[in-house]
Amino acid sequence: MLDARATLVARYFDAFQAGEVGGVDWELLRVSSGGAGRVVAETGIRGRGSATGLTTDATAGWLIAFAGDLVSEAIMYESFDEALLAGRRRAFAEARLYFVCDPVPDGRLLDAALRGGVDVLQLREKAPRCAEELISFSAQFARAAGEHGALFILNDRPDLVEACAADGVHIGQDDEPVAVARARAGPAAVVGLSTHTPQQLDAARSASGDDRPDQISVGPVWETPTKEGRPASGLKLVEHAAADDDPPWFAIGGIDASNVGEVVAAGAKRIVVVRAIRDAADPEAAARTLRAALPEQ
Image (cartoon, rainbow, N blue to C red; front, side, top):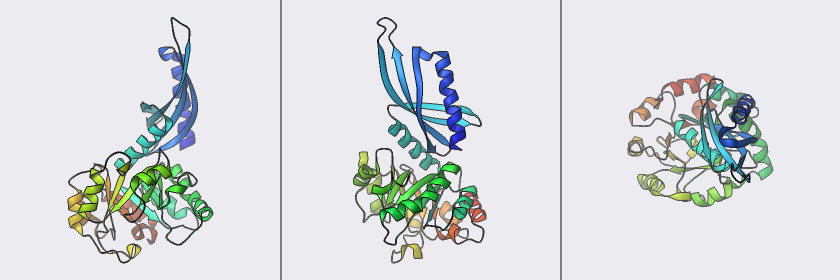
């Protein structure tokens, strides 16, 4: 997907150059996935003063969206990192189905989940692992997410976001603060935060600047073995979360096809699942069923 759209982006800037837009020369420097099918590009820009003849060199970041084979939107930012962060944040806001998975022996499960409608993949490995092992595990997550235009999030390890080619990191209440995780993950990385009580959720929403998470998880709605010892927060927390959607939030914990309707009725439009897809006989069909239960807007 990225290679094909990188070609379209190159043609787009070639057209700019051919038209001598504003007397500016454009050079495409690099292209990356921006999540949700968008592309982020960096361009070199050289402008020539009509009176003085002097040139000014600069770079810019672009967040580019597509309608079929045509560029439908191109937003210019001061830097590549700023455009990449904006794209990742928009992708989170538009996401509906978030799949958390431990390392898998091959990418078939991940590809099936993504075909079924998963928008975000998270690699979650709770067993003690060295950096080299996590980087190795992450390769198939990064590949699958990239091929399907999805986001890839690393759990708990902001220091490895760049090495794992992840779009960001997810941390818990007992981990380092959001601002510290953001600084370690890099300027373009998104940072997600788990919340389990109304007080934690309100604190996350009221934070500002680098302390404010880009995405929030709310739960666990029901007790789940993936969060052993964590009491269920119930649907009341989902109802509390539904009062606001900034930053975007996802209900999590024990959600599957049998109860997703209850979560949606309580106000959720995004969910996180583990077992409902990982342990399904047909992961693609399971993902598609869950995705169909979630509202588009």
